[in-house]
Image 1 (spheres, rainbow, N blue to C red):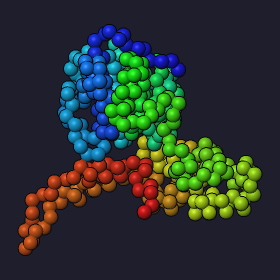
Image 2 (tube, rainbow, N blue to C red):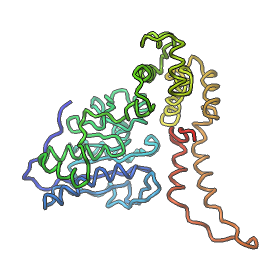
Image 3 (tube, rainbow, N blue to C red):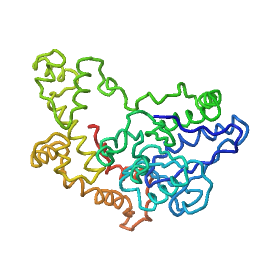
Image 4 (cartoon, helix red, strand yellow):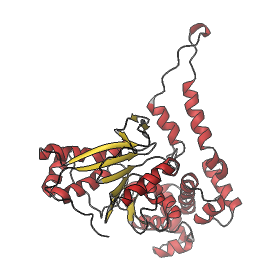
Length: 373
């Protein structure tokens, strides 16, 4: 991995184009743009300028339901130094042929390319990350590994590899942009931006994006953390419980008690949950045949996989994959129905809340209803 090229300090402002994919995450876009705004403010001059872009200049709806009206269409001849793809929900469905063609054209013009959240899916689809190290939101890691094996995927918050700069989701783009600003104009400016945003620590490329396992599990029990990490690393070829127990110098009976005490389930049940959660990601984010999804998650047969999937999620894998559009449409349509007033008179249609649209969209996500309340 090598550093991105630095811009001369005395050159004019760098111009960035933010390509908005449907259902992009607004927090990632803001995390990328706000540091540029603050860099200009603190420097007292225009170090950066930026444009938001869509295919035809029409508004693009973010994952939270809010619409953003872009500055321009991709057809406008803008003199861009860097293009950053802003992704979000279901990147495999939001990337279109026109996006790919335009990104390939930008690469031919030797423009730096980047992405935030799931935007690296678009770059990979265009063949622009082959041989590069890249980051993507952890939820899409498994699907992207299957779809683009020539991309060197990292679990870090962000990756800078030559003329490619990719960040995972949430606030990770803020760290990426602070890093790039620091390279362009010095660490003092980057630190000043952090102070303005009350951002205590600028995270580096060495920081990983997943929340530490001990916080997810709510325990500091070292043997449990070690076993769960081993499970997560071996989903395609599950390790037997006896071998797992021996790995941490426990008996199988002790292993069972450890899981019951801390996670209130058996180790086999927890392992099955990890494998089925990975399967759900692959079903919703890739076009892999169900038999290949089953194999990738450690199931020896499709019927056994389907049975386990239905018992855990309440829906068979085939319906899970095919029912996304139907459920989304039904959820939104239900909210659009006019309400009956007094005397049976219909009232005017109630405006659809952005939250309703966002929830309908989220029904197609692997994490939908993943926390049992």
